[in-house]
Image (cartoon, rainbow, N blue to C red):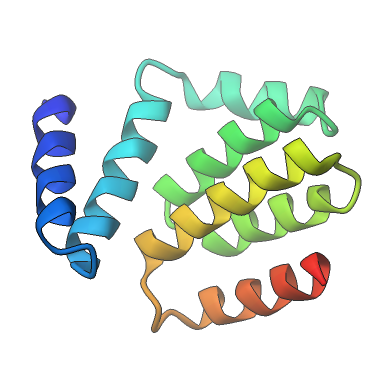
Length: 122
């Protein structure tokens, strides 16, 4: 179960905060947990109907990442970022950092999205 995996990864991170595999694993478990019980068609329909709704866009970005469509998720959230208040921006930044962990630092899509996020932050 996801609860057991979450505990295992959390314990590994507590023992070694630099354990990149455990950090990525915890991010993946969190992603799966957020998507648990959701129907992909419903998630996509809601995001299409509510393009400015942060929660709907975060949810469809999760779906994109789970399907390997990182560019779609990154682009969606970075486009949304500019129109958000500070709380919304923090939520997007946190979610993007989680996605970066899942994809890994060597993925060129991560480097590109990091640069764009940095330019939006500063």
